[in-house]
Image (cartoon, rainbow, N blue to C red; front, side, top):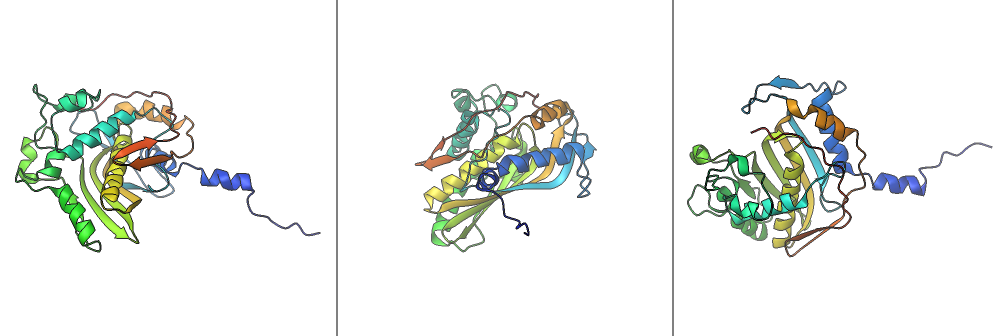
Length: 280
């Protein structure tokens, strides 16, 4: 009797469905940069960066995920939702003083602030008051999505050459563009500089919140999040932390609920704490 090759079992299918594709893709980025992707001829270069720490970098890497299925938060190492939630609220408020973050236990911007807590006209300022001229990019893009959904101009740009010298740190994520299709909302994000181990996990969570926020405000369903990192790097003093993380297991994708601007992670269990120094 001829053996008939059956497809995967029900259990195998469930396991395939439950793969955390975000974390799998994120780890692939780290591996490509740290070890070089010889199969795809992707090679890292050593660079002397602004911080003086030094790093290895690759050009124009990216991650694409379906935000309608899961929220991009890592499970192989501990992340703190309070950090990206408070930073997002701070970002869309248009505020640029770190004291508001400090009150919520978020100290990630402390090193760049002056003695009064000010950072200059950084991210939120350019979002809600571009070039200090009262132009609200967030309101503008919400209006354009609602009134002209097929437009190719649903754009937010945080890169303002006129005010770069007033900023404590020029924006690392600097461009967002939205695309409406069949009552679904997609978002592309561009990041000029990406600290893959410490910064990117929190940046991805912030981008996801922005897509969810805009989708809710425009009565659309958040769908696809596509992010491009132009200078994707790992700092020299992060190598051991990255290797530790890559050896840790990770769990299934994180289900979530987003309603009335409130994000609820349903099944998030944080991994171990893996520390690495911030390059300033």
